[in-house]
Image (cartoon, rainbow, N blue to C red; front, side, top):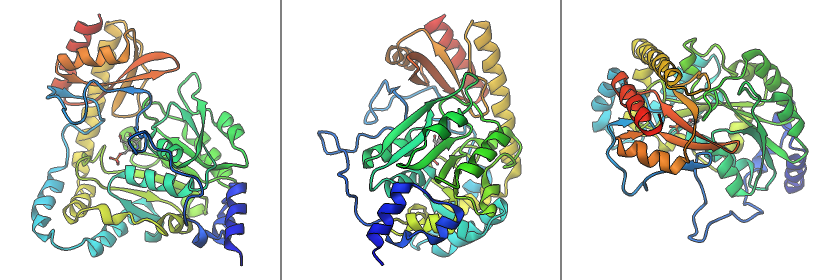
Length: 396
Ligand SMILES: Cc1ncc(COP(=O)(O)O)c(C=O)c1O
C-alpha cells in the first residue's frame, strides 16, 4: 500500500468521518512537514496566543501588580485539597508519573462518560492545542475558526504552514455556524471552536452547536475548546463530549487551569476518538509533560466540589459588580459566560495598558473589528474594586 498517496488524498479531501477515522491511514500521518516552518528573523516561531494584543511590559521584566486580572486565572485556587496532594507527593518526584497518570485518566473518563482510550493528557490544554496544530497542518491546508478567537491553536497552525480562514462572530457575539460551514473547503483540515469564546466571553447556543458539530464532523474534524464551560455552573451539561460516544470526530479540550485554579500546575486533557488521538500520539507524547505532584493535585481537585462551587459563586458576584460599575461609568460590555469580561474603550490599547499598569492593575487590551477593547479577568472582590477605581481614573 502506498501510504503517502493515501495520506495525501486523505489530507486533500480534509475528510475524517467516524467511519473514515477507522479507515484513515493515520499510521502514516505524521512523517515530516513538506512545508518549511515559518520563522521570524531570530529563528523563532512568531507565536502569540492572543489576538492583536498589546503588552505593556516584556516578560523578562514583569511588573508587580496589585490586581492581576490579565490571564483569566482563578484568584482563590488551587483547591486546598490539591495543595495538600502536591505537598504529600512532592517527595515522590524522583519517579515518572506513568501509573498515576492512568489512574487520573480513568477518573476523568468516568466523569466524562467515555472510555480511557478517548483521553489524552497534556501539561495544560495549550500543549494539546499546539500538538494538534503541529500534527494536523504538517502538510498545509486551512483552519476555519471564529474571529476573534483564542489564537493558540491557530497561530501554531499558521506557523506550521496552514492558512487561517476567519469567520466573524455574529452581532450577538455567538459563532456564525452557517458562515463557518460555508468557509469549509477541500483544503480544510480542522474547524476550531472556542465555546464559550475567548476573548469575547460569549457563548454559542448548545443545541445549534451540537447540530453543527454532529453534521460537520462527518466532513472535517472539529476541535472544541471548552476551557471556560465550567463557569456556566451547570457542570459539563453543555459539553460536546456526548458526540464522542456517537463516534463523531470531535476533539474536546479541557483544562484544570481555570475553574480548578491550577494554571501554574499545568494539567489539561483532550477527549477525542482513539484513532484521532493515535494520529497526534504517533509523533508526540502528552502526559510526559505533567509532574507527579500535579497528577495527584488534579485527582484531589476533581473531588473538591466545594472549591468549584466557591469559585463559581465568587466569579458570579464579581461579574455582577463589574457589569454594574461599567454601566454606571457609561461603558457597554459583552455579557460573559466565562471568568472575564470584554468591553470597548476609547483609548489606544498600549497607552491604556500602560496607564492601568501604572495604577497597579493588569488587564488585557485587544483590537477587534478596528476598535479597542479591554478584557478584565474576574479576581477577588478587592481586586475588582481596584480595577473599577483605576478604570474610572484612566478613562472616565
Ligand atoms: C480558550 C482557552 N483555551 C486554552 C487555554 C490554555 O490554558 P492551559 O494551557 O492553561 O490549559 C486558555 C488559557 O487562557 C484559554 O483561554
